Image 1 (cartoon, rainbow over the protein chains, first blue to last red):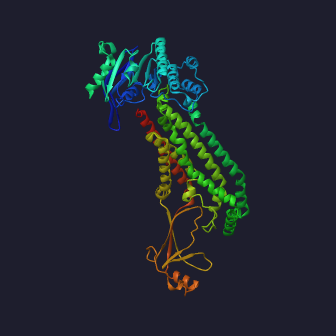
Image 2 (image 1 turned 180 degrees about the vertical axis):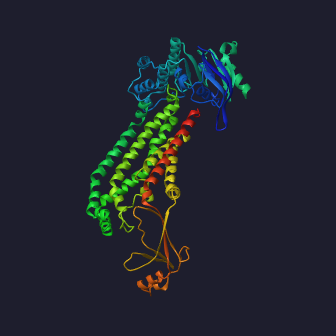
Image 3 (image 1 turned 30 degrees about the horizontal axis):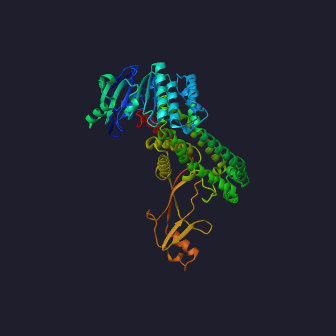
Length: 230
Length: 350
């Protein structure tokens, strides 16, 4: 599903991510952990084609994550970005206009279930509602891979659980592969069966959770890997 | 894409239409007035027969000066068209990319099924096309409205002090004809690039405006005069009571010049040369002082055998200059747009 070989990205001479090599098989729910500034967003942006790699290569679904591939990848960026001046309904129109494959009926149903007012401007939604809107847009693409960048970091505990429940349901319905990042290990422990630890721009560990942990506590394991990196 | 672009720019669209409507409302009813002044001044006769031109010119200039509405509308039009490129850069160009970057919504828009290159190209085409249409229509209205002034300026008999500046002068040149469309595109492209590089709308607006204004000052001063070697004309300075001439004494120094009459031309420089061909500088002779008389002063100056050298771009070059400037600016804008697309392909920092 995701294959990275020595992928890296540089900004103005500074490396945000270096020599990233990893593999995420189809059907997994992969958690990407690491402290702030570890390069999580850079790796995710490379995965969804928002960035081009400065070195190495990164393939998603058997090809570079640009052009036609991007239709098969859903993305929820950090802080659930939306167009503040557009209404909820206009966001659904935007998705329908910009995507060849678009499940408009499913998106409308989801908005209804969430109890979101279609006429409300996205800028006036609560953090949890905005995250749900962004997830709805990403799911309506019927993606084979869903990538989420710190999706629950800014949410209160209730909204966090609702969001993760929605994600789990979508995964159960469509068998979508998921890659999500967090700087909080506790957000990942629930459903993730695959783990990637990033520290200071490099991969510190990557593989199936069960293999990596070997019965140890997730938080302890991550801290150990990050300690090694210092 | 078209839907999203229109949704984000519809306010701009309505404002542009309002501006066009205001320009029509101001210029269409008064356009006939300038044409009437031209017809009643005797200039059509001058154009046909070449007789009575000086009289007709001064009648026309006086009539235009006596009509404050015409004068103020002329200058208002010039100011609007000179300010337009910077305004379009700030309010149409900068938000094109920077609004998405600043709000973070690029992470939503660029991960839909449309590549960001296509996203940029469609937006550049739609908004840039509107910029071109708006500036083109405004300029066409203003140029057509001012056409009688340009016709008058192209006829002989003017004394160089006509009512309103001609279309080849440095200021009006960039506000009439084709050049304003090129400048509008340049302003727009500058705004887009500034927004992409700075990612902050307010900072990008300031930089875009500064770049456009700097270019607007530098081009007429440095670039435009170089487009073609100016025509040089020399004439002997001969002063007589019935010939207008200017004798100016500032402090101890004497300055002499005679009026320049090159219909419709852009006079680049006027210099007075001494008999040996060097620039003329001299102390004021006594004949021009308090003890002299105007006649003595004129005779003393005539005896110096001065020459006046005028360098000008003749009226016939106007459209070649307009095409060159508009074309060069359009090409430059296209290059900036291509640079933005290349930059965007690599992606922006997370």
